[in-house]
Amino acid sequence: MILAAGFGKRLRPLTDEKPKALVPVCGRPIIDYTLSHLKRIGIRNVVVNLHYRGDELRKYLERKDDLKIICSDERHELLDTGGAVVKAMANFGSNPFLVINCDIIWLNGVKDTLLCMAEQWDDSRHDALLLVHPTVSARGYRGLGDFFMSSCGGLTRRRESEVAPFIFCGVQILHPRLFTGCPNGRFSLNSLYDRAEKNLRLSGLRHDGMWLHLSQKEDLLVVESALNAL
Image 1: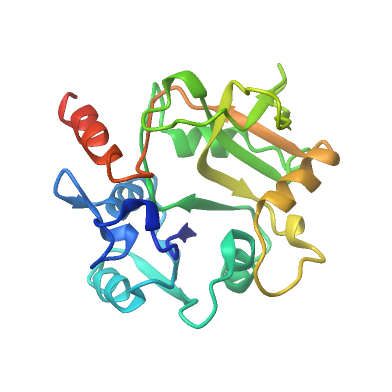
Image 2: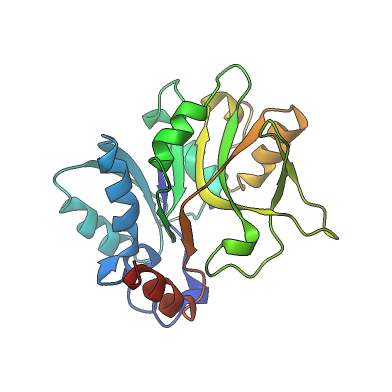
């Protein structure tokens, strides 16, 4: 699932007339970078949630005839990340599934990042596996980090007064059991990460490639410069 329903307010004016997922980066809509990663490893069934300027995004995705894309329509009620996944849950069956934010670009390291995540997944000890990146080398990121990671990969969320060495990259594998007892309606996946952390079932995989975050319009130049330099 690709999370693409946000307004992209911090990207204005780039999002005044198009949804965030269609903001061009080096001439390509940003969502295309994620779709290319998925196709590269053989994934063809993708759910994309819609809200702001949803008709435009739907029409664009309908032209992707090499993928089976299901649009999860949130135009009447924006559900946040957790509610969005719950609404689309029937599409995932009983197996773990990928959830990816639409406003990121990553480049693989030594091996394909998504395949590394699949290899790292351990059903006996994971409810959520998050891709994390060192805070100091995250392009376009200005925050204090999200998590500490143990030697065995367990994640602990930073407290308000702390600076954490890893940022969550917006790429994750989740198991349907993580959503047991969740309400319908709006809520954030953060509440489920906290539950998984409490149960020692939240882990991370350190990304060894490049990670780029398009959060504000000023980031576009940084992101495009990094890609053009390759």
